[in-house]
Image (spheres, one colour):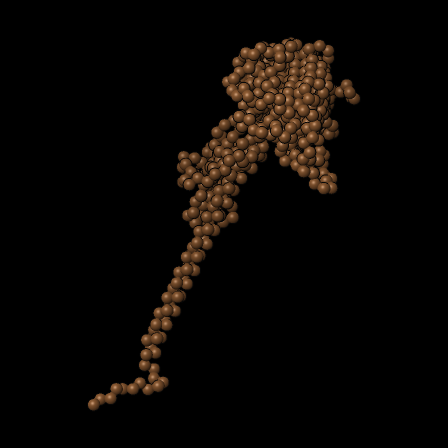
Length: 510
């Protein structure tokens, strides 16, 4: 009989199996940990690349924005100079390979972009970011701000007396000027400071920029920000259909403003209710926290001063003054002010008309009698348009003076304040720039004048008498009138940009 074999205590039998099991378990854990670590690294790299390429695509948009705000056409290097510029290449998918792209780097990623002008003041920028095979694309709409954006705007204060009107019309439309609020309500009065207009004023809309709470102990530049509506807009001007009573009902066009209930009843432009949005989608009153940046900037105006002096052979004293009742020959201009080029100016004709071109004038005389541009007689432009205007840079004062009715680029206007045809305000643009010594000129118009132009004088005080009609836009530092001014914004001015672009829309394309 065979006895069962006993396993002696302390024997190694069975340990090998346990060791193998343990090794398999440890190896499996190592494999899992390694795979997890590698997978995590891949995820991290993917996330890193995914974020890097969208940042690179955004850098392309910012590159285009910088070029536009620097006064450069963003597509100017493409495609004609592609062979001589290493950063201009054929676009890669998903961008159209028929386009030329500008390239650059943003950190560890690269970008390519091209821009397309879609409308008068709008560009679409298509940008592609790429790293390690990861690609993301974005499209951004860049909008150029308007240089002339309101019937009247003042940097520090608007102060009117008497009855006033601010409405809009279109010089591109046939027939008489139509005094009704247009889509978007562009007959706007606005300021970075107070808007002091009498109760009898009627307007399309009000803009109160720089409207924010005043911090405790504020010691910054004036006007100080304030959220007190009664202080910024103390009276009760009316939002309404601004058709003067002397116009027949036929001058109101439902096609321009189809909602006859807009605005609703008697609405004060300075009330909180005026911020309600009408059917046109535009508020009657806008309170904007940031300050409206005036355009042209002081640097741009100084550049215009420099160019005027250069055009006169480097001598300020050789720049003439201008009187519309004389036949003095205008000085030719040969330098180029930003952003457009100058043209050689022909002499002014005997009948007080002039042709498209660039004109520079300086103050002559001293004290109140000093004048750079003196419209002392009716004045018109011939052959000028919004795309080919008469541009006047005044290094000093601009005056529209003298007794009786007088027309400036408004020969069809009559003493009743009605234009038999719509004057083109963009055809005559006037800029008041500082003299080489830094003196800032002013704008002054006496009573009963009929003017059609776009005035940009962001450093200047603008004043005037009463019963004046302005077809176009006035941009001043401070605007004060004696009453009875009617401001008719020409919507054609909305097409004129100020070389300052902002991003209006931004989206990623899959």
